[in-house]
Length: 179
Image 1 (tube, helix red, strand yellow):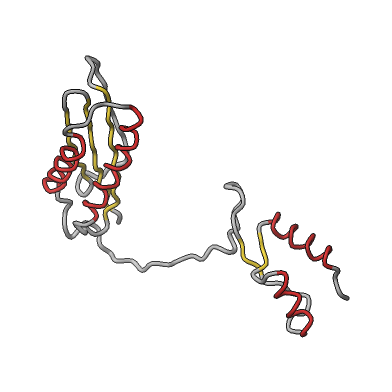
Image 2 (image 1 turned 90 degrees about the horizontal axis):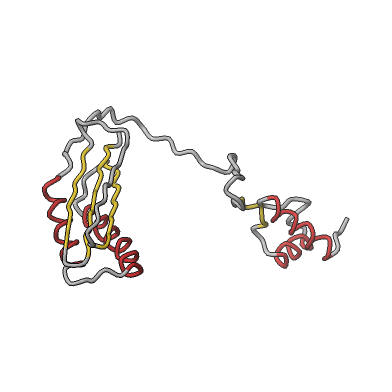
């Protein structure tokens, strides 16, 4: 039984609404159907339309072998990272005046630069979290706190505070060891 073009388009739209689309274009599907290569089957590619919808079947699970390594072979170099933080904050913010929009973009840029420079140190099995705060220096105080689950034997952090005439900046790098 041959489907009309309108019925095929409706079927393709309903597949899209359900979370799957045909991997063949409509024209290729018709051409293969006419030559007898496809008999009532359609290959599909899954995608996630909304965050709440998940297609667990299409997820491939990667199984990693145990390394039986309980601690880091090389500890996180806090002093080196402190130098990176000082160099980056000083070079980016030494002559800057506080402007809210500029500082908002600078926090993103500075955190990416710090993250890439720390990753260049190639310290294995550490997850890096980089947080940068920039604020106006105008006779006010601020308290910044952070919390997480922590193993004091292997997890650590590095922090540097910077000030110029109009702004302050605080950069933190948290290094959490992945067992």
